[in-house]
Length: 208
Image 1: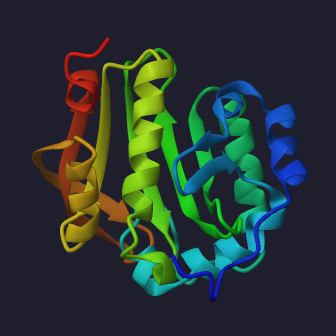
Image 2: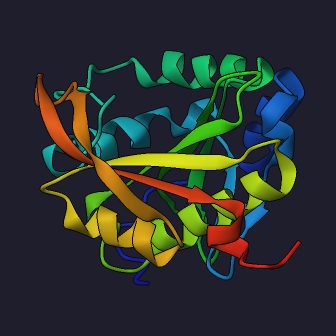
């Protein structure tokens, strides 16, 4: 992927503070792929999150990102994700490019303690679309979740005018199981969505 226009990354020691402050689920990070590192969020990521997630083309395909993105609020959100990680409710990671540590987006697992299902979500900055970033990151986190958490199923929802995200889920082994509606903060409305799910067998086949 090109390095032009890359956003500055948080320093490794800043990201590691999240693990020490809120071990829990964040202790599973970082996760690595050929091109990416999924690491804990750091407060230094707040400005780039506001820039990338604040773009309409990104926010409109998500459920929980408002538009416009309120300036100065990303830092509080990052701290909330640390608390959620410590409580075993959510794992949120920065998607970072290995070659230059550029911040590309975020990926998360939402869990309900005591239940065997989690929800996978992700977003990637508009300038980084079309390079397989979401597929690589989502596949890595989904496989980690089944290998390390007591889960029977992963779920995901995709707004129906976002076929690229639906293609990401299909590529990593998710199956479309129906349609529904979810609220989008950016659109300030309920949207039709495709429902997807995956089991351990979907991702690993007959492998233990």
